[in-house]
Image (cartoon, rainbow, N blue to C red):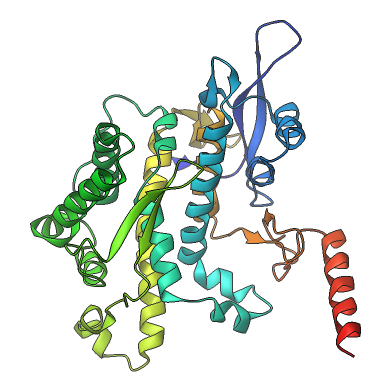
Amino acid sequence: MQIGLTNEYRAKLWREVGANDPVEENKIYWDYKSRRSELLEEFLKIDYSTEESIMRFLIMYGFPEPLLDETGVNTPAMRELTEFIKRVIAVLNRANKKVYTQNLSQTKKENQTDDDRTIFLDIMNLLTGSCILECLEMPEDTNYEMDTPILFFLMELLMRWHRCGNSEERIKQEFKELFVRFFCEDGIKNVGKESMWIQFSKLIDWKDMSLYKIIRDRNGCMNFVLREDVKLNFSTTLAGKRWREKENTRELIREFWKDFSKHIMEEYCTFFWDSVSWRVKFRKNGEMELVPDGANMVQALMLALAYTYDSKTYLRVCENCKQFFYPAATHPNSICCSSRCADRRRKRIDRQRKKIR
């Protein structure tokens, strides 16, 4: 029996029809053939500064059922979901780094942004979790333990957040206490990928709370902020035998970030997967496969991320409009989301060159 990765998968979305009750509609959220999610692309294009942009998405794709309140669509929750998805994408692209860099026409430019501090903060911002995860409607009997340490850690952290209220100092204290217990002390001996976590835990002194802070941004997400003068300590991280066998330290660090990002994505994909009900479906040739048995919008967006990771593809930011897009398989080197954007970018560059002359 295989997991269903050969079809177009559909989400149950709700659309308001006049004064009647909302009616259920199915919308495709992952197209296996093109290896892209139109739903995810369009969701990331929402401009929350204009009501028109929000309504355009709602008219096309329906209302995000888990993000509704008594007044209608919960816009702050949609903002938080957008921010969380962008954080997942940052780590997802790192996990699929080999494919990502192979398909870049400007690899040198990509390497210039390959900053250890930025990668570290991308990972930590994802590890701080998000209250939006509670919208996934996990089954009550779901139980994460030390074989999935990140999920175990996140579930415990989310429960403590509610007790902290808006006190950033208490949130920081709770985060430090949990992180040290799970990954820096005895707990690390019981988690999966032990050596990888040991390397990560030595990058900074987690017990020294003056080195970092955790603040809530305007989207409701927690941001991990590292003090400007703090440098990541790779001298002890790269001390193992596996590392000594290689000469290029820079390459070792890149390999570490890629492997660690994969580890994080594997656990998050497990989380997204567990949030959805599955059923058995028979193909025309008689083979069985597991397919999602309906999904709300938040679950559909999370599954689109999981399928993106599994398909070894990625999302890139358009050089012109700055929106996320899936590069077409026929044009993997594309740095613009459309021929229109590519043309506008080319004209802008030409104008800049003429000014220099």
